[in-house]
Image (cartoon, rainbow, N blue to C red; front, side, top):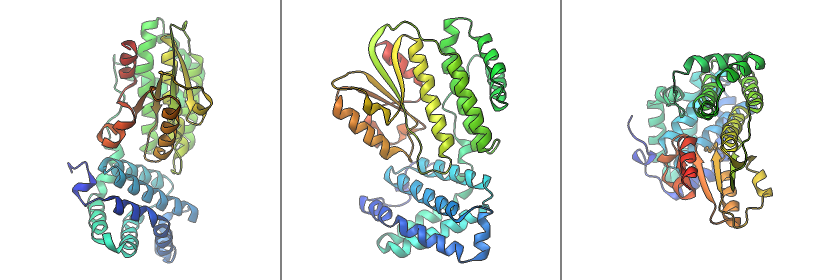
Length: 358
């Protein structure tokens, strides 16, 4: 499967997208009723509640809607793969997803007659590529690379975090951070890859939600213990914003990940002599941005928080039209509609290079 755009499978128009979104509540109700009315189908959701089933269907539709908006196979594959993995952890059987696809196709095509052939084609493609969709999380390349033969260090560090052994985790870090040059590299080449690995271990069902939240919380406390702020050399202010995930089944893990990712970069900026703030997107409204020419760095952009991102972007630009905005996350460079909102980057060191030469 080499295609990147859903428009290579079906014709996508604004009317098709609007029709799909307008009927989304209807789809949820029809599919839920179909599954609940058949005891054999209902058994496939395991010991989960009806509310959990509704959330799975809602997430499925939300992913589909966003993938259509951005004409992106990547969003569809990654979103559904993550949803399936999370559901499997809760005891949902794989067969439910096949039934879910068939039920959604039936409900959509019976509700949106005008585009029924398009959705039949799209769902036939999803079912045909079901195994690829399911394994998408495994095949996704990591955003942060390993350097300086640091895999052994990262492995030991992560094991201490999952054991909640903060003292040993700090000992490991302090034994490495004996000069400023190593400290700067540590943020980029140790902390970011470690954070990403923790998320991948969770997504691949190596650790459950409670264990992963514990590890991420321990990570955050260790990060606070090694923070060093240098003398401020640059009067410009920089804002590292993180977007909470909303209306997604594993939102707590992903939101915590986004917050720590932004905090690592904010700490690195402070260490390099910049005035830096790490903020939830809601907190940026409290800052006086009027006519500033500073930089806003946004972490954690996803299909689930994109509307919140747009609102934040509009607020920032209304107050400070000249402010510079950088946007990070997985493969957003593939989505042409993102470019107009800011400068895209795949690794924070790219922003550091820009700021150095500014």
